[in-house]
Image 1 (tube, helix red, strand yellow):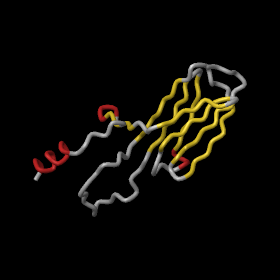
Image 2 (cartoon, rainbow, N blue to C red; image 1 turned 90 degrees about the vertical axis):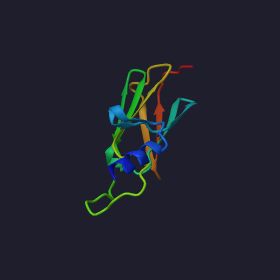
Image 3 (cartoon, helix red, strand yellow; image 1 turned 60 degrees about the vertical axis):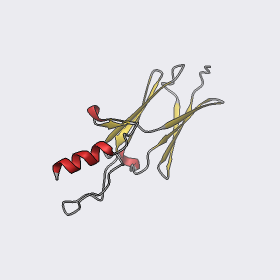
Image 4 (cartoon, helix red, strand yellow; image 1 turned 180 degrees about the horizontal axis):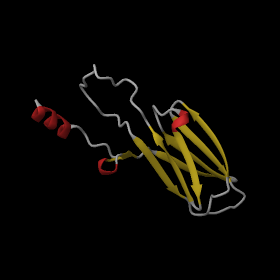
Length: 123
């Protein structure tokens, strides 16, 4: 049975956003330049808002946290696993410093939207 499970796991498609050696997954993000700053959208389905960390240092934004699997218990056996439940991190570098920007945050339906309002303009 162990061999059939190993064979099954090898046949599963690789998740492009996951680096198994680091135990992190890397969510997709969109970044837009807007008048007065930036808009960043991060796809975080299944992440609780209180599990989110947002940090800005210099020209770098880091969004991190954890997605937990609430349905797992000792009485459940799995048939198919494709969703990654673990710590995640998304790091975005901007072409100019964003440290000190006013950050407005909206989280709805698994989509985190950050508005970075900065008096500094950059291209």
